[in-house]
Length: 105
Image (cartoon, rainbow, N blue to C red; front, side):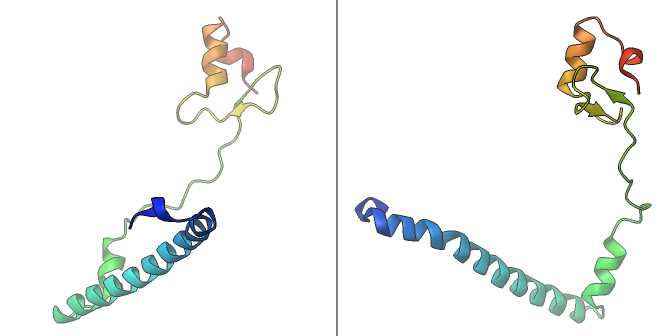
């Protein structure tokens, strides 16, 4: 399809319709794949639910929100739990000679 021949109104209409069509096709494709997987599982004497429940990781519950341990002294909205990568404001604080002990809550 050569879209360079379309007018502006047609291009805008196409732009609006494309996300809807993509979503429609994703739903249809997902349903098709599910039917295929259910048929495959059934040929081996299983249900898809049984197979998927066995494949699911058996981890503990999801961790809740971490408690804030560090807060920027000039901007209290900047906070960090101490988990994961250090935020930029913490890196800047440390690079400026500050310590984590100084911003500990």
